Length: 255
Image (cartoon, rainbow, N blue to C red; front, side):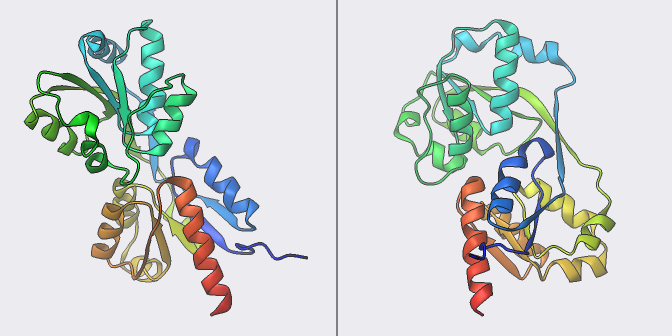
């Protein structure tokens, strides 16, 4: 019998619950044991009328940017609810969001091919000469301002459509400690911050020695500052996380 690459390894999956299934299934198919421990809850905005007012300006825009799969899910739902059919050019920051847009019926998506973040999108040729454009950014409540600030510096007018909100998931840290995972995956700096806040000094000392897998440099840098000693920077999305987990497990098996 062929031994599966993650056989017997317990992998903590901290994605929001509704988004955790694909990674959990991939871990399971590789023989691992996915431990679902969402650190963020993703919720609809409380004021849907304000969102409808925001997106009523969309026909006047030259470009709409969706900054995450959540922005696609909730933003496109709001567009459907409004009966909006006229949409401008559409861009996003990474392959996961681009795939979500295609599944929602958007065939032509501007998306980076190398660096999957605001910096990567801002480097795209399509966003260099945008003086006089109106741009709408679909996002959650708050977040980085780099994208909007840079577009404004290039002469664009930018407005936000805040289409979802994030909150800290209420998880008992005792469950995490009892589970004793072999590795931890974290997909946002905000989630990693919540995890660190949940832990007392003794728990931090125990967990920060565990391998932590993060798909973005900013998350990895925060982990290093917090004191994690085994930080693995992975490729983008679930595919990047799984690939890094498999490579780590292979090294672990022969060490």
